[in-house]
Length: 250
Image (tube, rainbow, N blue to C red; front, side, top):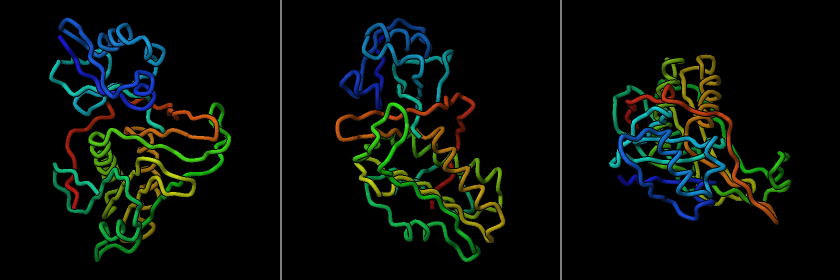
């Protein structure tokens, strides 16, 4: 049987294509698919120990069964406006993966209501100095790539996790920019709204950006004057990092 697999970031560069096809007899598990892909595409074989796999936009482990009709993706650990339909929530939520420059006031307006007195937000930006081993010492620009459809689902999951921990949060916005971003440009934005500043908004916003770096499939390439390198994270999500139902963005 033929399995079509999407590739992102480092794996895409190594193969030189966004998609590969793997021939394998059924029944097939994720572990078997990784082994077959490594054999049929030797260029990606060295990356197999760190590769993450999603099946139908959910993280999958080695014993997970896969079928030819599944949407399968291989990618490295994440480096770390669109609406998402699904379950209902009484509070506004906004999730986006976009190439557009962020209008922070406009995003705040999407989650602000009459009962909101505080909005705490995190804004990430491209810095010009990296100071990390293996990366260019001076950053000229960053290239961001995302598995867009899965990224928005995982942003919705983060919102659900925030509401479980901080039920007084009234609204949540999570936005990731992709494409080429120059030094100083905004890359990531997370905002949490609450009636008062001491009702979990600070902790919720911090949790939101930290969780985004763990489970939202977004990668960045550091581009310097003479070299470039994809940045890989260290967190390896499992099926325990999956949840099925998403809040409805308002």
